[in-house]
Image (cartoon, rainbow, N blue to C red; front, side, top):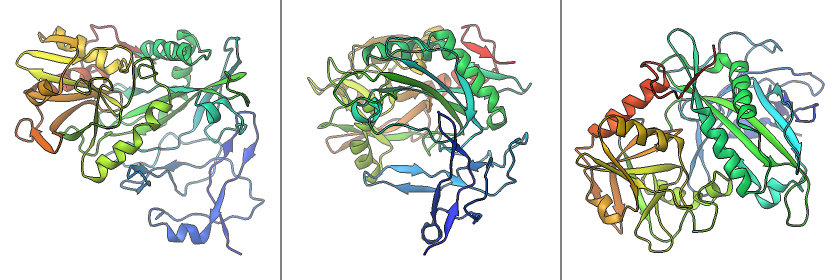
Length: 421
C-alpha cells in the first residue's frame, strides 16, 4: 500500500467542517514540479493552517497546450495565527495561484437578497453534483487588484465598476447579485484579512477574484434555487511571461469567442472555457494569445482571449465598440479616459483587420495585464510587426499613467482610488 502524503492545508467547506486531502508518496515522487519536501503525517493528525504558494516556473501543460501554474505546498509552522510575513520571493512571483489565509462567502436563495456574509479560512467549498453552476454553467466572476503603497496604505482601483458589471451579468444569467455596497465591503474585508499577502510596492499586486455561482441543486434546466457569492485572493506579478515586453498574437479565423445575442458582453464563466482550445493551439505554436474576429463578417476585431484590443494610428486610438459581443473592460474604460485626458483622439467603433495590420502600434488592456504592447500579429500565415521589437511609445505612456495612478504615485484626479486605511 502506498503511503499517503497530507497537504498541510485546512480546507474549510462553506457549510463548516474540515476535510483532509491526500495524495500518494509515489505520485509526489513522480511529479517533477513538486520539488518541496512534504510532511507525511498519521491520519489522525489534526491540521490547522499551512502556508502554500506557487514556486517560480512550476507549470504543467494541459491537453489543450495551456500552461497552468501549480499551487505547491511548503513546510512552515502549523499555527492558527499567521505571522505578519510570508515566505515568497517577490522578485520572481508570476501570475499563479497562491493560497492565502481567508476567503469571503455569502448566500441567498432565488428571488431573495444577499444578507451579511462572513470571512472563513481559505479552502475547498462543498457543492452538490446537481449544483446549477456545475450542470448549466450558471456562474460569473470578476477580477480586480489591491496595491500596497510606500506609506503602507492599501488601494483598490474602481471596485464599484466591478460591482456594477457583476450586477449586469447576473441579470443576463438569471441570478441575484450583491449590491454595489455589499460587493465593495466584501472586497475590503477580504483584502484586509489577507493583508500580509499584498506584495511590497512595485513588486506586484493582490489579485481579487469575486465569484457568483448557482450553488443550489437543480436537475431540469432552470435557475438554481440558491446562490453563493465568494471572494478569494492571490498575490500576483505579470500575467504574460513577457511582462511589459511585446506579445505576439495570432488571429483566429475559424473559432469565435462570442456571437450576437449571446453572453459575450458579460463575465460568465463559459466565455473563458470556450477560448481554451484556440488559445492552447496558439501557445503550442509559440504565440502569446489569440485575437478573435466577429462571427458574422469575420473581418472586425473583437477581443483577445481575456483582453480588449486597441490600435494606434498617429494621434488616434481606436478600439472595438461595445455592442453585445465584447466585454466592457474596466481597464479598457479607464485607458480611454486617460488617453483622452492626455490629448489623444479615441474612437470606439468597428475596427477592421486591414486597419489593424496598418496600425502604428497595437496594445491590449485588462485587469491582469493592465496594458500589454503587441509586437506582432499573424493573419492567414503572414506576420506584421510593430516597432523594433520594443514597447511602443503610446503603450508605454498609457501603461505608466495608469499604473502610477493605481499604485498611488500620482494624484487621483479621476476619483478612481479607494483607500483601505
